[in-house]
Image 1: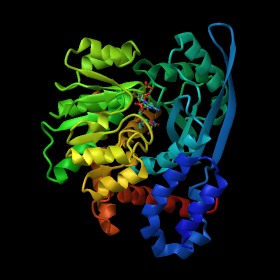
Image 2: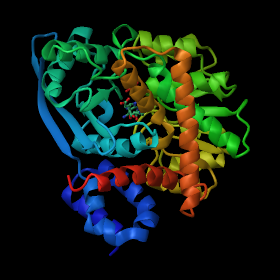
Image 3: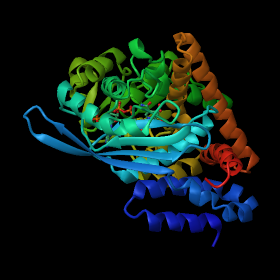
Image 4: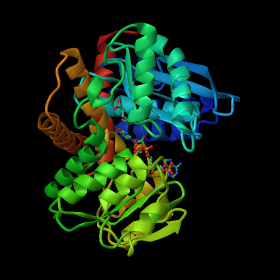
Length: 444
Ligand code: NDP
Ligand code: 2IT
């Protein structure tokens, strides 16, 4: 059996009941066959892949807090410090009822390769809790965040591990966690990113993941001879990534016509009204039914459905495995030419294979959504020098990073005989840097 197959079997055997983690590992290992095959003896002797798929450290902890009725609630907290070969662990925190160890491990594993692709000095990690911020009062969210940080603070630090936001963790949650860290550690330092501008945050971090997604998409389309202007875009999600993907798409002259949340989805044939969407989601924290009430021509549908809308470009920006084979078939049938992932692993493996086989340009999340973490690393730089850069400076660096990522993954794909396979290109380019650093640092 090949070394790659052996390691995949080991992962399935040693990590039972973690299907998302298996999926993330399988996708990477499949891409790496061409690299590992060239040097299998050395990689096998050094157990390079076994080390790559095993987190350096996992912390799991109890998060007790008191709700508004005086009832004590208990959640499960996680931080997976996956790989620190090229920098301090870096990656978001997710607060969502579906969070479990397997989900955090898949996200941490992907983060290792994504962070490598940014070309910045950040290792990979991820964390979170099975806490649901939806419907909770600000006081309840604060109580949860303080309890979460009371334990997490002993495992993180500006040169050790720097968490940030992800699903369910935005500016409000980062603020509460930062306050608690500062109180316990008595240190004012860049231990979290995505902070508010008044206490060490970076301009353009809020926009970064969505903007970055569009910078890469624009470069991809340009290099493949597809016009950008007036293209119809289907977007899923209505959170941080989706909102700023829609904003940049509009700035580039594209027409985003959909968005969604976990209850339903919107089709707005005149194009999404961003002012209304931001008010509903960022200010009121309400459901998308509120959007439909304000826009006469917009349709609201329960459940999922954005991939059935005719579009040229599809940008999944909600959650893992939200775009399956049936969705991929609809997209292809409707003439969709480009799929770039704003979310982490939103496309199932069979859907990815179908899209690629059908000639759709497909860029996976670890390349396409790397703008968020890249700008987090720029926030770390600003915190270290105790200075703040202008919006234009950060945004300019972000754009350059995304354009570079596109060319790096395109070059890597070509070099290994997989022209146009940007999944292989991303996994190979991300892997090579981390592998080299691990080999150089010995068996640690
Ligand atoms: P938010 O919490 O701001 O928004 C998430 C959006 O996705 C919401 O509209 C939410 O709907 C929807 N959603 C979440 N879970 C589900 C689900 N199980 N089924 C259907 N809809 C769901 O998160 P972000 O925008 O920050 O994150 C979106 C994706 O982007 C995630 O995959 C995240 O890992 C990834 N990502 C985020 C980055 C960042 O900087 N924030 C960086 C790189 C990737 P509802 O409100 O109803 O739950
Ligand atoms: O998935 C991701 O890259 C993020 N949630 C952002 C991580 C970060 O450290 O900014």
